[in-house]
Length: 295
Image (cartoon, rainbow, N blue to C red):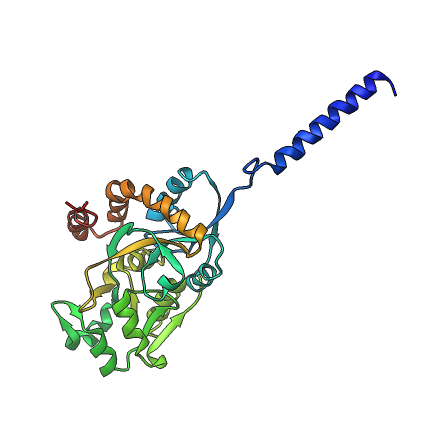
C-alpha cells in the first residue's frame, strides 16, 4: 500500500471514529420529540372549509406556538372529537388546542391555563319551532331539563363533545331516544341538515359555529334563533390540553408561558370578529376581565 493510500485510510478511519463518538455523546444530534396537534373542524376556532377557511382563532394561534416551540417537530392531524379523545388517552405526545376542562378529561389530559373565553353552548332552533320552547323560557333562557323532561322533542348533539360540565351532566341523565348523537367529521353540519329535514327540532351547540355553518349551507341566519341555557354561565373557557405524561406536562409548561401575552392581547380580538355585531362590543368589554393578574 502506498503512503498516499495509507494516509487516505487513516483520514477515513478518523472520520468514522469521530462520527461514532458523536453518536455516543449525550445530546449530540439527538432527534426532537414529535408533538402531534389534534384539530377538528370547529368554527370559529378552526375552519377547514368555506369562505373563512384557515381564519379561525386557533388556525392563527397554532403557527405562533409552533414558531416559539422549536424544540419539537410538529405534526398536525385532523380528527373528529371521538378519535381525538382516544388519541389523548394513548399517552403519546398529543395536544388539542380546543378543549374544555371536564373532570373526566382531567384524568388523562394535562391542561394549560385558560386561553380563551367563549360564549357558552345553547339551543339552536328554527323559527318555525320557537313556539315549542315558549313554556320553558325565562328571560329568554331555556330550562333545558324541564323542556326535555316534558316533551318528546329530539336533541341533536356531537358525540364525545363537551358542552360545559353542567350541561354534560344533564345529558347523561337523558334516555338515549331523546338524543341524536353524531360521530362524523362534519357532525354539526349534518345535524343542521337533519334539523332542516325535521328529523330533530333542537340542536345543542355554539352560536358562532352554527351561524357560520348555516351561512355556508346557503340558508338564512334570520330563520334561526339561539337560546342560552338557564343556569349555565355566559362564558366558558378553552384550554390547550396535552396527554398527561411527563412530555405532555413539559409541553404545557412552555405553552403556559406563551399564552400569557397571547390570551391578553390577541385571542379575544380574533374571537370577537366572529360574533354578531350586537354581541361583539359586550364580549370585548367582558374579555378584559377574563385574565386579570391577581393584586
